[in-house]
Amino acid sequence: MNARDEEFGEFMRDRASLLHQSAYLLCGDWHLAHDLVQDTLVKAYQHWPRVRQADSPDAYVRRILLNEVRGRWRRRERAVPVSRFPEGREPVAPDAIDELTRRAGLLQALLALPLRQRATIILRYLEGMSERETAAALGCSEGTVKSQSARALGTLKDFLDRMESAL
Amino acid sequence: MNSPQETQLGHDLRDLVSGQPFTPDLEGIGRRARQRHRRGLALRGATTGAVAVLAAGGVFAGVHAAGGTPAGAPAATSAGAPAGHRASAGAASHPASAPARTETVAYVTAQVKTALANVNNYILRDDQVQTGPGGDSATNWTDPRTGNDFEVLYDATAGKSIAWLSTYLVHRVLTWKDIEADYSTRTWFISVIHAAGPIQGSTAGATNSVMTPADIKQWLDSGQLKIVGHQDIDGHHTIGLRQPWATGYRELWVDSRTFLPVRLITADFANLKGPMKNVRLIDNETWLPRTKQLLTMVNHVHIPAGFTHVAPPQ
Image 1 (tube, rainbow over the protein chains, first blue to last red):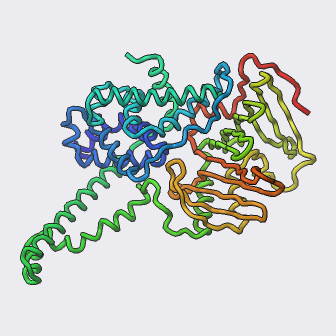
Image 2: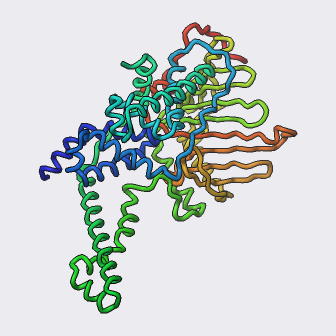
Image 3: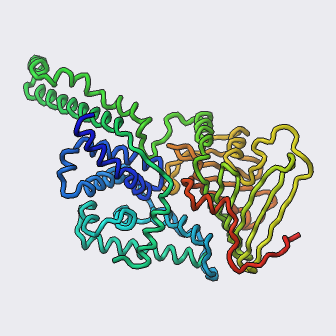
């Protein structure tokens, strides 16, 4: 193994798992997430000198991942129906099962968001990136991150409120 | 600083993705990156060669250009290679939802059976809706390893209830246990039903309580299936199989990449009149990772606080 491989391996070992989790929340399928991450890592390896010299190698790799997701879904992206739960039920006090059911429904709501909003939520709240880091990864301004994040949170809140009232 | 809602969202997202370790295949990544690099060089060589041929404006000049440019000659043969490589690389990295190459019923059913052989790695979520009057809906989470099932049912008249359903053998006698909590009365009960007599012969597959992968396999073997087409369902490109009968039909839509079931539609018009003629049972299937939370939800009974234990309905 040469120095480049070692350096790349070390960089990826710490991050691959989180990248895989982000890919899953972006596409909703673990198998596809696996493929997306492998393809992302192949590209990161190919351009490793550029990646390691970037201001934020993490943001660079997230950007490759997003481009991979966009490439795969360009012709296929569509909303996942989120209104399967009947409306107008009497709200009841949530219990542990309701909480688990609510979380299971969260993925559905997340997948219904536009890709950029979804990515913003994943980078900010799963990966714990700052607004600045998220902006670097998405290739947009911090203001855009704020507005995308607010919109996405609003949509998710609507969904979760509706689900809670159904439960 | 995040709001409590944002903090909760972070917890929920981490919870959704827990329990799926991932180790990158660094050797494979390096190999594929080098293949792509070589392919890129070959393509550039092919382009350079072709431009040179066109510029020279003749066969003679073309031959000269191919001989004079190191990348030109190999490019002529390797230019076609990427397509072949892509095809063979497909096993490791397949397109998101490419249609199956050979779509005979035999091919599709064989692929579905293979896919169903590996479902023990998942928890199956089944969102069932009934179209037409009534419009009940239910969500079931099934653990294929234990056969246990957790159900959240929304009945149009009775409201919400939750249930844990398990099926097991007691001295070869099939036994169904149903632990159910009713939110409208805030009560819960346990119901245990035994089959009339012991099972004769093999008991394999006897303890399944819902339309399980084993049932789907059996259905696939029942014959009279035909492919009814393709459609996109919840982001999956799917192939549909249909089994018609005198008073209805059943359709199974499977992902054309993974061949796992995505939707099951059952329509039986026997003895139905008026608007009930339009009733369909639609099961949307999602194959979820076996997270600790889901396993707990499916395999451990948790009666909501404040519910009263009552005798099962007769």
